[in-house]
Amino acid sequence: MPSRSTSLFDRTILKFDRLAYQDELDRSSLRDLPFELRTVHNGDYLVRAGEGVVRCGLLVEGYACRHKVTRNGGRQIVSFHIPGDILNLQNLFLERSDHNLEMISGGQVAWIPVHSLSALVENHPNIAKAIWRDTLIDASIFREWVVNVGRRTAKTRIAHMLCEFAARRATADASQTDNPYIPITQQQIADATGLTPVHVNRMIRALVEDGAMARGSRVVITDWALMRSIADFDPAYLHQQAA
Amino acid sequence: MPSRSTSLFDRTILKFDRLAYQDELDRSSLRDLPFELRTVHNGDYLVRAGEGVVRCGLLVEGYACRHKVTRNGGRQIVSFHIPGDILNLQNLFLERSDHNLEMISGGQVAWIPVHSLSALVENHPNIAKAIWRDTLIDASIFREWVVNVGRRTAKTRIAHMLCEFAARRATADASQTDNPYIPITQQQIADATGLTPVHVNRMIRALVEDGAMARGSRVVITDWALMRSIADFDPAYLHQQAA
DNA sequence: CGTAGGTTTGACTGATCTCAAGTTTGGTGG
DNA sequence: CCACCAAACTTGAGATCAGTCAAACCTACG
Image (cartoon, rainbow over all chains, first blue to last red; front, side, top):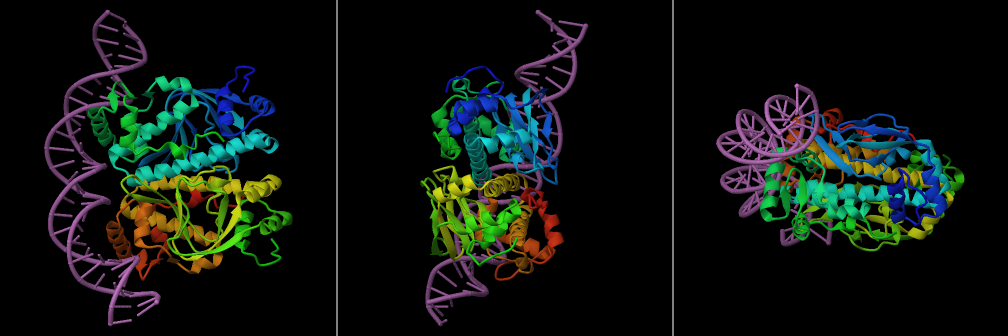
């Protein structure tokens, strides 16, 4: 995969390459998409539940999550996103958002009009295949989250979530493998696992006592094998093997 | 939508019509897909987690669910399926199954080779759009399940699951609206909501005492408005409005 | 009628939540 | 470089929702 130039979409191009065969024309067409670049801050909402959406946000830098809120104010994070992800691909075919999209760090987002992305998908079968696979893998991850939240104990649940985050980031960017720092707070872990922050804190202490992770300023996995085994983590559901 | 002939795929054709515009050629092409019809029984596995899959099962008659099992044997149902559904559309682009697919009643399944379905999708943009939207709605439902299992109390959780099942079936088949009978056991409700069968039983008693449902031989909703309100159920996530 | 699967009930246990302090950390301005 | 502040993290004690275990009880069906 020769890379001609540096572009904000390079991470996404790499990702699509992993998802399905892409030729040079596919890559350049993706690179040539119109977009509007915006700097965003921790806590900014990119999309709110119920909104009509006519653009897709490509996460260039920083981290984001999708979440929903129940009647009683319970907040549940349903996914995390890393640079290179297109954050609301479902809006390619579903006009109205069923969830919120929020930044969990500062960063940059490139907004692409849905109609431009639709046209790209119609004219480039390889890109369509990559995007479709991406949305199907997304669905597979949601299924695993249902299992995680529904049938695992608090400690295992947290460990699983951390393993997934680390594994996805390692795949997206090989250089990150050395950087075990996970940029999310205990409150966010609680919202993702369906627990309270207090209990997350206690379980993290237990994981530290087990020797699986360190309690630095933020989350760091120190013993991968141990963490994976505590987590009941089998990465098959991430469908990361070559297309 | 004129219906020329009666076919095993009629429910699916109706479903695709709801998902995206289909012309007569689209419908006849779907109807002409090669398939192998099989009678299946309650408890039969159609696909097992980890298997390579080269065919898609169209549920002609009966009910099915998808589920995963944790290391300790905990079983979590991640979706239910009704007649007309294509059960493992994700295998159109993901070769290996990440979950089990099991019948929860007797019925009939039409097995369609993945390559036939792929060809159909490549040559019929309207069908591709319908199927893609279907998989995206699937993902939306998984997100809601994460919220349901993660952040709702047992009673609300069960009520929500029942509302969804009834709402989806009502959309799929108008004549079913009058038939509030829900063909799943308390054990299955427990596996879908991440609870134990014992607690499901107690919460169902509470729902009966509230007057929202009846405790017949199987589940029947008697007061929709009440059930919806107990359930914190907002059907927006089902994206059932016209395409 | 006998049986298996599904449902119902009771008594007790335990994982997780709630409430209510502290304490540490990282950034910011003087 | 230090003082301060807000956000995040930590800890303890008591309450509660849901789980466990064990036993009946239906009910459809052969």
